[in-house]
Each structure stands twice: as structure tokens, then as C-alpha cells.
Length: 93
Image: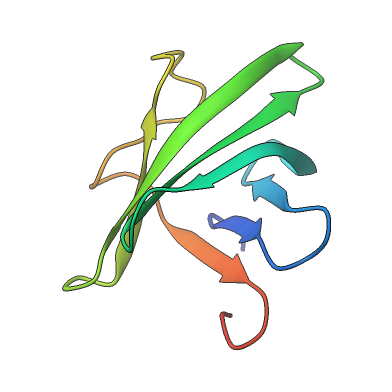
């Protein structure tokens, strides 16, 4: 079975993101928390030679996380009905 989950590790000294079908981990170059339920992150996709900027939205009622593509680059399909996740770190798997 293919892992269809995005994995974000924000707990290490060098935060990373792993993307299904595209690999990684890619080093997160910028991470900004915007309240309890959202944060923005940026990383450089070496194979495509471009920067990816996302805003992550957490819905505590549904327990889901989805990503808004801030550059509208359609890097991977995003939105509340399209993206699944796993966050790595202490007590977060």
C-alpha cells in the first residue's frame, strides 16, 4: 500500500515535510504559527526547482488538516476534502 499521508516533523531542530508520491523529506525553510489552528510553511522542491508555500488549516472538530496553496501553483491537490496528514514528533503520530 502506498503511503498517502503528508508527514510534517516540526519538533526536530531542522523541520521537514514528506510528500506522498514526491518523496522527501524536504527541509522546511520557513514555519510560522498563526494561532491555534493554522500555520504557514515553505520548502524548496529541488526536483522542480521552485519554492512551495502552504498555509495549513486544522479543523479540531473533524480532526483534519488541509493545506491552502498560497502561490496557487497546484503543486499537489489541496483543500479540505483532498489532503490527509500525519504529524511526527512526541505523542503526535
